[in-house]
Image 1: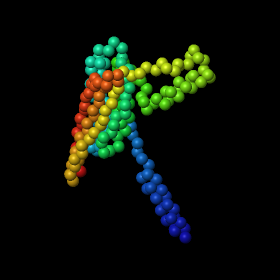
Image 2: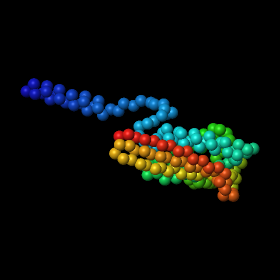
Image 3: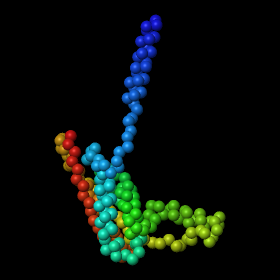
Length: 194
């Protein structure tokens, strides 16, 4: 009887050790700028390459370089025309951040964030705040330019290789005249062997 209990206890402890240890993930920090080559699908290295290339190109445009004051710009969401899920807000956020850091561009509130902006102005002008310190309704500046674009892909594969081509195209549009002031594209091609 005692031998049977010892065997059951040993089996129970062994199972806890085996299953307990096997289910704990091992997490480590990685360099966010390290080239990531896990698969041919869109990844962090692609995001960084696209954002850096487009930011550099946009900062060299006549409209931005020759402006006596940083032009006011808004950004439309990048359209995802690929067959995979890509959080395109990461692309626009990264480009916006790099452009703002340059000090050569200012950004107006995006159309998608306008509800929050109007809500804040309404709250400040509700009578609960000192009128001299409240932001006034009707004083928002309209963006002179708009950045918009799309990311597309072409995927080819056979039983041995998957080849993925990504293209990000962005343009800077003059909101008043409707003219394109700048357009550029960045291509990335990746292969994955199975």
